[in-house]
Length: 242
Image 1 (spheres, rainbow, N blue to C red):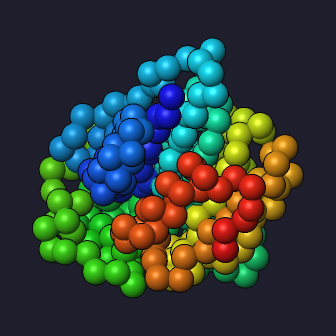
Image 2 (image 1 turned 90 degrees about the vertical axis):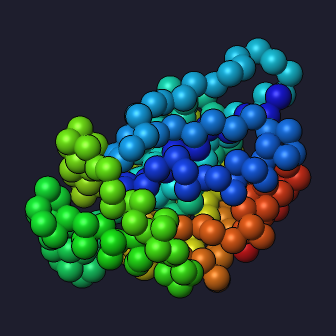
Image 3 (image 1 turned 180 degrees about the vertical axis):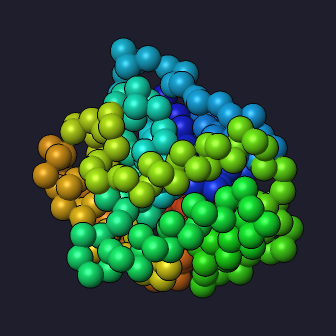
């Protein structure tokens, strides 16, 4: 039994996993994606289809960015494997990088529900996809159809991001964890990445594995890199992939 529950990050939605879903379903994985419902998709949280009594179950939580803090803690706790894509324990660094990041996040918060909202979100998504290109259709879909309840979730989740200071609630210390860090990520500070590795090392029974991607930004878009994750899940728990 092989199943996956994926959780997008702040200002994203479940459609961002379309390539991931195709690749994993073609290899007989069961795929589900949770949804916060910021835009035109109703919010929904997923549950595992199979219980833990089955022989060698493989329940994988794949979380992008804030998604590790948004996914249901019950799902995270019962995951045998966790993939953290440009995720974090504490988002705002505690060193000298703190002030400009905090100021930028406050400006984003203040832009919500104002005439500058769409422009702020457009800049955020462009920055998150760099150095890769985001097509106009995908970019505009992230700006349209934000409902009143969706906007409230955007605000509350941004507060969650700003106040984050520890590993996501529910992460089981017996889980096998893969960290994916993009070297051209323009969203996460280097200290934020280092803090996650430190916190996971202290929390987990087994050291987390790490894949460093040189050709990606905050979002993972390339098929070859999605296949690296699939390869680790299916074949390569014994060694670190760098």
